[in-house]
Length: 51
Image (cartoon, rainbow, N blue to C red; front, side, top):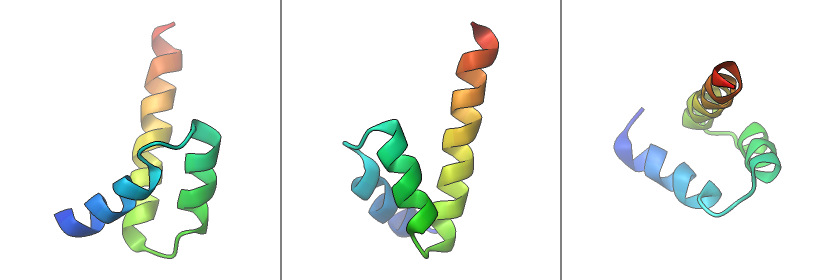
């Protein structure tokens, strides 16, 4: 994944809520959006594991 592709996707979801971010990423057709979606899921799982 290139930096420019990741930045393009992150700029779309930067100010969105968690639910809206998941919806946007699931509907995007970019391959990079799938990787970013996996990162978000992983981050959320880490937050709940520590609590």
